[in-house]
Amino acid sequence: MRNYIGLIHKDAESDYGVSFPDFPGVVTAGTDLDNARAMAEEALALHIEGLAEDGEAIPEPSSLEAVMSDPENQDGVAILVAVKTGAKKAVRVNVTLPEDVLNEIDAFAEAHGLTRSGFLARAARHEMQLASDEDDNHAEARLSA
Image (tube, rainbow, N blue to C red; front, side, top):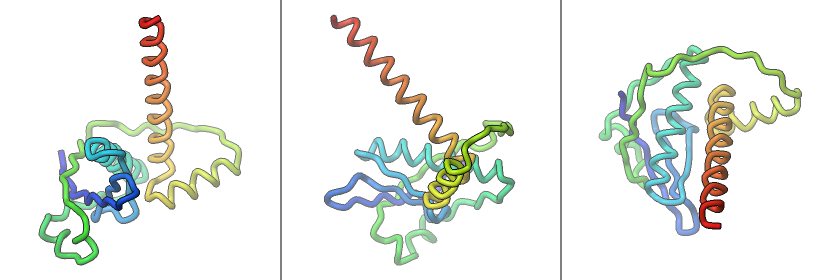
């Protein structure tokens, strides 16, 4: 398991944002500190998974001293974000999508520091979690009726 530095940022009217100095462009946010930490772990794991799938190098974690010596990072609060490495095997799949949807996916992924594979995995997990939450809510409603 590796630990990377995440920087939490909070403006008065915003959620808790998290950025990663070792992975420029990778950002996420959470409604509270616990949610921000969970989202940071998920975002970083997906990004690293995408890099591995694409055969790209995964940087070694920077030290806290190196991260905080950069003046651009001094307005963030540093947290350690754990990433499990080597636990998952990447599997190549073939999917068919309309060209315009694929172009939108690629543009969104690039703008958010993700690979196409990382974005699709994140979107799938998000949708499955929403469906699971809805199932739980329906079960609770049946029990309380």
